[in-house]
Length: 154
Image (cartoon, rainbow, N blue to C red):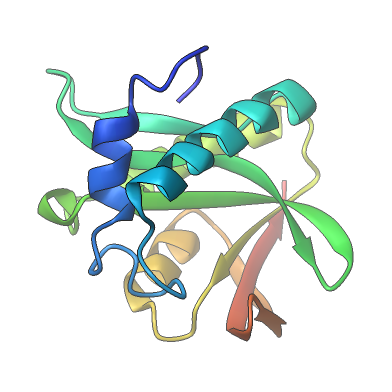
């Protein structure tokens, strides 16, 4: 999702507007909000040197997004690995593969501690976090609801 335009808007809107993919968020995003999401991500690259990547198959089919963002947890900034996978590609191991690559990129960039913020009912996301070596550290209130913080020193 880097670049100077919104070439990925159709794919990202389909992903972020899907109620099933976004079931652990307050609500699915609109097409306009998906555009804002892309702009936010581009700003992350400018300000922090990292953000979310588009996940694609080897033949170029859109799978989702994954990468590193800065998230506030109880007033303290942390580097978080985040991921969204299109419904058709869930349970194929692609979120784990992408999250592991993001973890490795964080390590190479000198990030000392990586987190994943996950809703308690999102068992698939918890499994991805655990598979890449993150452990449950604490429970917090984030965006108006309970969230689990998985983390690990890199």
